Image 1 (spheres, rainbow, N blue to C red):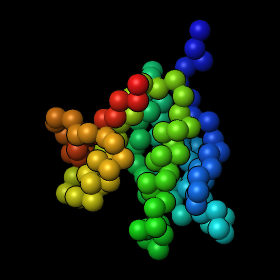
Image 2: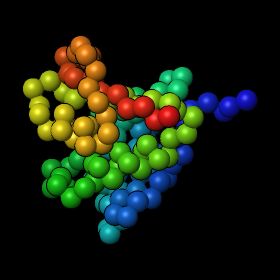
Image 3: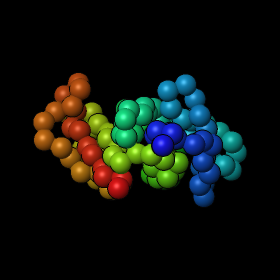
Length: 121
């Protein structure tokens, strides 16, 4: 019998780590232990639903978001899918989720954004 889906944190990467927070994880830069962002997510059945990822303005462009999503996906067990949403009117999140191996789904997500899906099986 499976324990069900879960995310095991903390998770360490080359330059960042994820630490558990209520509703998600803080993205911490290893070089100085600064919190440079956060990712909010939930687990339902066998899906990891990523609601939002946010990187502090001064920390953008250095791979914190990409590394955080890779760490989150690696730390998740018992999932078969992962989903995310790109806010409406913003092209950069669409590119980001595509680079992370997610593909767009037909229709609009909550709030009018574009929904993304990744098969983890």
